[in-house]
Length: 315
Image 1: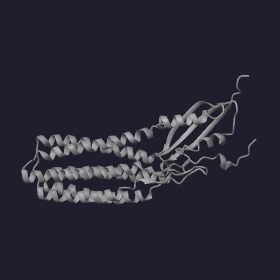
Image 2: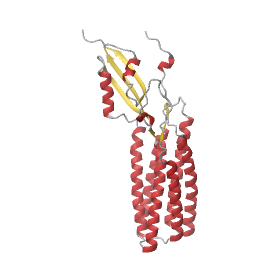
Image 3: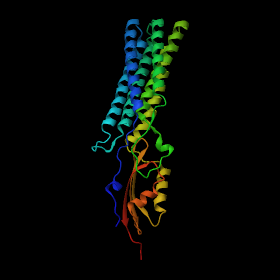
Image 4: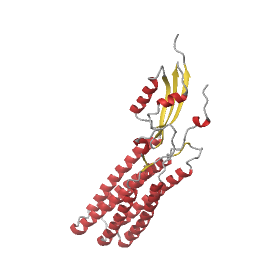
């Protein structure tokens, strides 16, 4: 018999990302975007600029997306130790990023439809006023991008005592903040394209360039949003680990003594955290801790459950 303390058998279930700096900076970006949105909507109505008005409503959708981002941070923090969730509320950050990317895609489609309409029905624009406001909006986007850039890495502070740190473990991508950053870049892109189109229309009378630039911006934004969906959706659906990594785990366990794996499940429980349930059949059974130590080199495995079944070999 092997004596163990209760703590020896307990697993950590908090896989949430801690990114307080990212949360604070997202709040600042939300405030900047909100007031810029109001300015563009009022200016668009006052100066009769449909392009500016559309960009203002475009920013309104990003304000909503930033609010989703902040909600995800707060919810994750509030429920960090809530036993209601099997593996903490860590995935709310991914859910926030997924929801934001969907909103971004919807915005891109609306922009694309509006651009096609404006290609056939041009609108009269007060160029000087519209360019000034668009330039101001671009400056706000630039400031917001600086606030959010390089702050999508954060640290999770729950570890097992025997775990080693490696580069892949220490740096986790905050998909929630990444989605917010994508929204800022999308705003900046539309502002740049709007300024180029307005200048060309003012000095060369290329009125057609305004909707064409809007189409280009919409397609680029749609590409970004699709990428974010592809990155977050598999994790939300409990995507398994890579085939090579899984094969290495199997080889490690089965190459020791006469072990055979009868059941194996590996799935994501956090941005860079995986849980594993493995059932072993062996004629020389060891304690579960013995097999867990065999898996120590696999730093992405943060929650390990091992079932050992004794099956004597043929006499």
